[in-house]
Image (cartoon, rainbow, N blue to C red; front, side, top):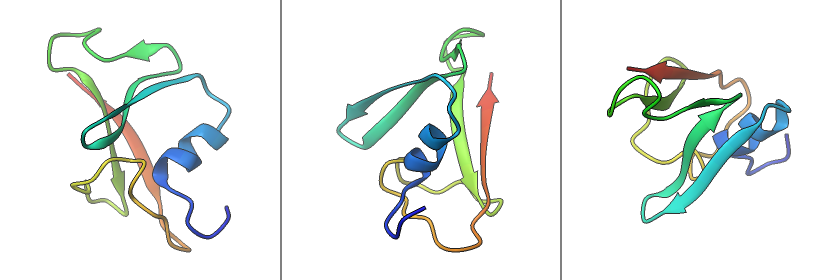
Length: 76
């Protein structure tokens, strides 16, 4: 990735279908690969972690550094 790439940039580079929209907090991912938020209850949806910790910023604002490991996971 180029310098300044975000978690959202990395997700989009995977080639999966991604539904996202902007909010007052930044980019919000509502579906990945056809699995959408609220599909398994009103509070279900996608979250991400970087190096094992869940950042408190949107995926479109978190700038990656060399060696970072990103995990996306679905919560119910």
